[in-house]
Image 1 (spheres, rainbow over the protein chains, first blue to last red):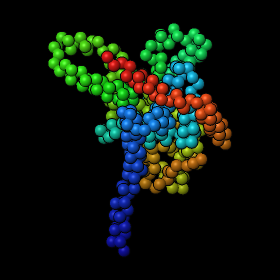
Image 2: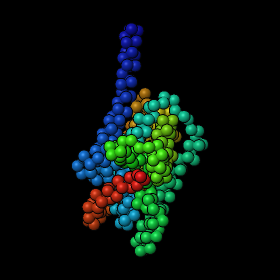
Image 3: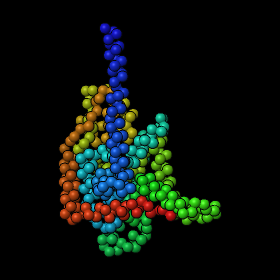
Image 4: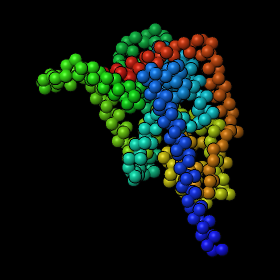
Length: 313
Length: 46
């Protein structure tokens, strides 16, 4: 009898890690598929290119489109519809399962086993930074749209320079990683093909000719990469204005999470696993929509008693 | 309950925006906007 019990326990122990890996692998597969689609669209290989960039990737694509449409100036009905419909129906699900920069951050966070811990006090004030960035971007874009509509916007647009079309996209690490770096490599290859050997003095002149914005963008992209290694989802937590916009709206999302209090033993495994630092145990158990929750379902995987599950509506 | 009401209002607003976008033929602008965004991505190239 005792032997049977030991055998049973052994079986249970063997089965648990498999089950835990399931959802995480499913999410990685989803993120990888969307990244592939996104990259195919960037190199013009995917059919219906704008349709993939804009509605399928609302965390980033729709926000960029929102800024660009405002600078035209046209009422950005389509990006508004995309952001509202996706976020109200699915919350920040797309941040966790679709966003390419979220996927890059998830991969980079695997580089280091032990991550840097940010104190709760620092975390609580730092997460407001993204709302400030969102406010600044919307202020610039909306004021430009208004001034252009009133026919007084041309000097303002000229003053804004490269930031007039899409202020966030101009500096965002996503645009640097997916557009600027591949384009720079392509340009460098073409240049090397025409003149493979150049004197050192000439090289220095060429480096000086590169606009400062290029270096600023590279620095931001480097910061994005380094911070993601040390703190999982650093960019999403503290910087991303798209995440901030979705965080505001996701509080009213129909998709949320539910904690079964009959199964929950409050061992805090979910809280410790959550990359977005959601205080799951302090939230209402019937249904919770925390602004930071990306519905990555890492908490579902982490809970040994399967007390957490998604709830809709 | 209150949240559900707000969610319904926002959903209706989103659907109206989508309908208006289709009616005003804004879908045709997408290609132009995407090109504009690609150019923004390449702005700082020397």
